[in-house]
Length: 167
Image (cartoon, rainbow, N blue to C red; front, side, top):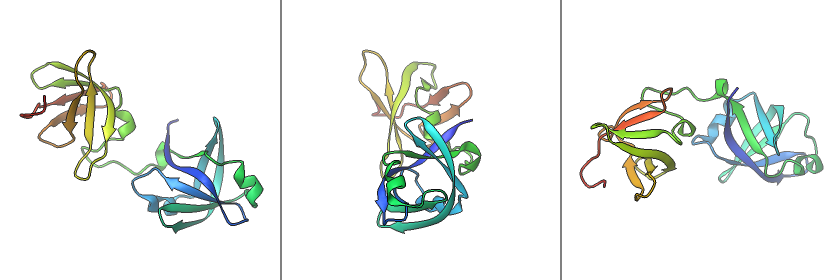
């Protein structure tokens, strides 16, 4: 079973065991739709039912059943908040989970092997895929329809059109 990280516990809020969570999901409001979360603390995964979700500035305030005091909550500091794949937000057409793109082979529409995706940069307008190839300068590809022609998740291959000025 696969998991998605949606937050990191950065500390506690109050004395009743509420976690302060930095959201690593694009939509922090998704915490409100969940019934339970998995807390991964040093490789040990525990499932907790959610009692209450709140928001304070850029943080999520998460209260779960079974954690009733600050001392217990402190033990989970730096732990990851995970959800199962079935609780993930469904993808629209031509959308992909970024985790599935890392290490994917990238080829041009002319059949040239360009390298593999080593990083994904978040910009205001669109993501940018960093394609690394041994001995060559990284190639930066904008995640736009004109450039990204096909993504084959199962086959681990992305076909792209190299727009003018990208090399």
